[in-house]
Image (tube, rainbow, N blue to C red; front, side):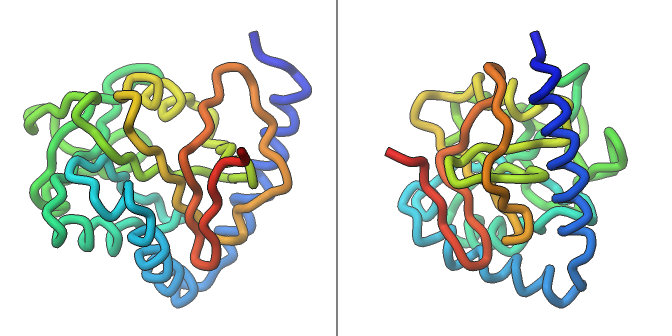
Length: 195
């Protein structure tokens, strides 16, 4: 059951964080995407991952393409999610991002015929979000897609949020179904869960 106060707080954080990231200039967005590569690759679980679930960014989100390219160059196999039902994602391997096509809400995704990836194969998930906090809490868009997906992964899989610094908030309101991340990487910070 949803907590009405948490839902209201989440809605406010979504509005504020979306406005902050929408206000970034294209040059700042590109610089941020490249800055995240170096920081993310400094994490052993990112640097050494061989099976990676990426995401295709919306215009507001931090673009993971430079990091994905660096991971491919290191020998990682890349998968992308495809919306296959209410709050449900199917995973598919992708050899070339040019094979992705607009799907749910216009977000690029693989075709249904692309080779399926088993969630237990995935070692690293690059996770988009609206807002993130110091405890590696994440606020998505409210559909629950990633919270459900993260519970389907193997126990050793890392979930790393990629964000602009402007998306960091003091605290993301958490409910029982919200899944914390393994790390959050911004252009200037690497945030790990509190001990």
